[in-house]
Length: 348
Image (tube, rainbow, N blue to C red):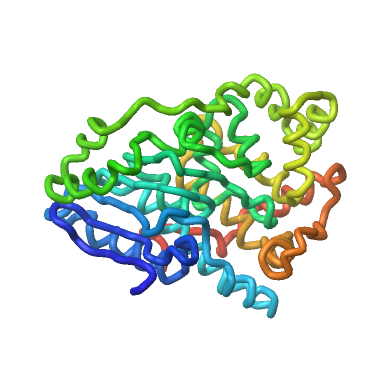
């Protein structure tokens, strides 16, 4: 497959995203190929660990390739999108639960679907160019691919802030927020990966790691906690309205652009997943409740139209920013019954 290279190299299973011209955006076929490789390598004695990387300087993976999803949704066919998300989420779970070390090297943009490939392993590496985000609320979706669980585990109310605003993180912020584990200068990556292939010794990553860069988000933690600790979107908006300063102004601007329905649901999801009850499968199943409904009952098609198709950056959201009804959020996050997300052992 020209979009992805999957092979065994020495002691490693290797996955390389190879469509840099599209910022390595993840297609449905790429998701299926990764899932099949994970299944093959889980019990393969020749594979000591996995190494995941991507070609190009601009992006590890800037998200999912949603062109076909948009086209089918506009025709009233919502099954393709649901199948894409369902199979992608199963791959995310298999990666999170993989029984061997998984190292990912994430340069440039790692967003949305890229987080689902790069941020569920055991050895997540960033460099100076790394820029991470979960910007889904800007297109009428919720942080998914298991990203809601990472947000729920972030310090304080940082998850709420990152999920609602879609704010971008540099390497120091990604480490602080729990999206990465190691900072290693990108010039050192090729030699390190070659050694991993040769030896299968994941402790080489620990030895290569450098001190983490500064995290601006860490410095803003108190302000974030003060303004993003509310139970509902309206609580957050009221807290920001009562505040002032550069942080508050910036946060208000970011929230004003995003889908109120998606932000309200994101907040509720993070709250549900925080604490010991938050697991990858619960996160993915909850995310799927929303995404399965997002085209038919939410803002996803309008968000894609405004951001990617017409590029007018002026979406007409289904709900008013300050008038979002709790019932709307509840309806999007209700269990799907027989149509809900299932995983490999019970999915036929």
